[in-house]
Image (tube, rainbow, N blue to C red; front, side):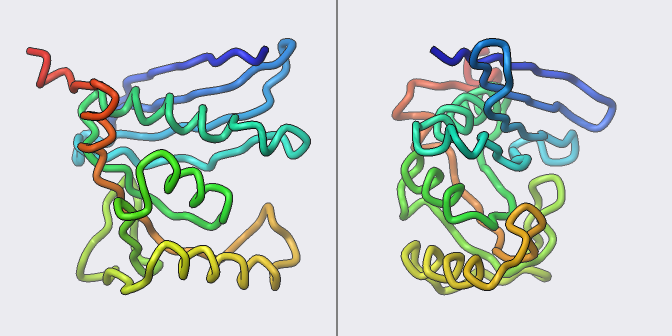
Length: 172
């Protein structure tokens, strides 16, 4: 049975969260995020990775869920970042609900900040976003070095409420 290991590190610029899944001492999946001192309510995710032969077993969902739970407990209210993978987008929809996903053009989402002047909200549905990623993926030669996708912003308040999670400030 795979086991999760979590790591929280405070740096001079914010908090780094790492979640790894181990099976028999070997890393089979990783996910993480960053909460910037300048944007303490935003969790900027890192790339989700699950070993290809282990995909389809719910490990990506488990990794993302654990990292987001940590982020919420540390004050994150939004998950904001770039999505290039249909797999990753499907996990977000499963965890947070399709209606919670807000899509933006490929603007600047560095450290969890989508700048409205740079990135306009895209008037697309979840299904349209999936179709767009599928079409783009069909034309990609190197799936590990992708240059497709869009930014996605998710309000985490409903997820936090459904799972009984509170931030440090809410517990005080």
